[in-house]
Structures are given as C-alpha cells and as structure tokens.
Image (cartoon, rainbow, N blue to C red; front, side, top):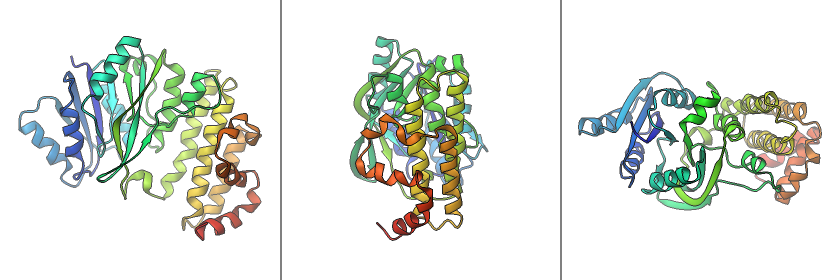
Length: 322
C-alpha cells in the first residue's frame, strides 16, 4: 500500500498538467500513488495523463467522471485512496521535489493529522510573494489562528484517518469548498503542525474559477453556512465566535467588493443579501476585538457593511477605479 495518495481534480489544463505531474513524479520520496480525476476535459489533458501510463508509469491512475466541480472529485479521490496520508493539488499547480519527504517526516515525528506549509503565488514564469500558511488572529487560541488562516487544501497534507474518523467531506456542488471544509477539519484534528517553508507553487491564471466574476461568487454564503452550522452543532460556536465572525465578515466583504467593480445587473441586491447573512449570525460583527489587527484601509472599506445605505455610492466610487 502506498504511503501517500495524491489527488488531482482535472478539467481542461493541457498547458499545465505535465508540469504538475512531473513535479510529483520527481519527488525524493517515492512511496505514493497519483489519482487523477478527469472531470469532462475536452482538450488534450486526458491524453497527456494517459501518455504517462502508456509509457509504463504505474503510479498514476486516471478516473473519468462527470462531476462538474472539484468537491466531488476530491471526495471521489478520498474514497479511492489507498494511502495513509492524502495530498490534494490543483492540476495547474506544482511542488518542490522535497515536499513529500519533508512533510511526511515531520508529521510522523510529531504524530500530526494535518501539516500546513507555505506556498509561492506563481504567475507564469514569475515567482511572486510567499503565501503564509498560517496567520495570527491576535489571540493565543491556536484553533482561532487556524480558522482565520488561508483556507486552501494544496498547502496541507492530511492523515486519511482524519476523514475516516470524522466523516467530513467537501460540500458538493459548491465553490469555496475549502472555506467550508478546512476549519471543520481543524476543529476535529488531534494535532496540527505548521512548517514555515514554501513547498508549493500556486498558479494564478486568467480564466481560472477563482478569477471569474459570475454567479458562482454567491456560493460563498452557503459555504460559510456549512462551516458555521458545523461549529454550532459541535458546541464550538461561542468559544470561537470572534474568529468565525472575522472570517465571515471578510468573505462577505470579498463578495461585496468584487461585485462593486463588476457589471452584474443585480449586484446591489446581492450585496444586501450578503450583509443580511452576516448579521443573521453576527449582529454586532463590527465590535469584534480581532478587527483591530486588520489594516486600517480594510477596516474603513468594511464599514460599508455597517452602513448599507451607502452601498450605491460605494459601487459608483469603486467602479470608477478608486
């Protein structure tokens, strides 16, 4: 049985999948399997993956599915993974060759169920800023720090037992599925470690889901609801209310700010729906002590959620490039 299962959801990434696979196959630690979940690719992506198998690579398996999103693909990968540890990577990203060896060694040494590390934000051939895997919430509570940290699966490795024990999966048919899933896993994990090394390259590219302004933006609210209701169901909401409030307010504001510069016809109504959602969970969200750690400019802009009557003016100003 392989030690690590690498799960790669794939859809139309013919220009990137080879770099992704090569970076995995060149790892210094070689006891792993690669599960490529091909979700209705119409370009040459599948043929490129198949060429590795035809050339004798026994580590790669490809599954053809019709899921229409990464959540189902990841859940499918979890169900078919044979490894003791799971690593999820987007099909247009790539990693350093020592990722598996270093992270696995630290996880086994410290008996961790989740390991978090740093990444590079990568734009074509230009290495950009380091994305820190962990943020400080202005509190000594470690879970609060993890709740407000970047919700991405590709800068983490997991013990599969964590998924088996908790039954947590990625919410299907939603984007922002990482946001709904990671804080739930952090709540249930027996031990989480942070490795302050950049081991992964996260590619920003035009046309990617995260760079598109469309109706999928509104998946943010149900994804947040999955997270918040989970903490309520596990009697952890009040203990971590400030961190949950901060995460909710920041992500609702992300939707409001994104809509402000868009041409979406019903943006004003959708912005008000976001504020209503925020207030339904956190009526006094703006009195959160953790907000003082945000940049002043961010706090000023977020005041629009406290005074929604100014939304139309805010949209005009933002649309004008200010």
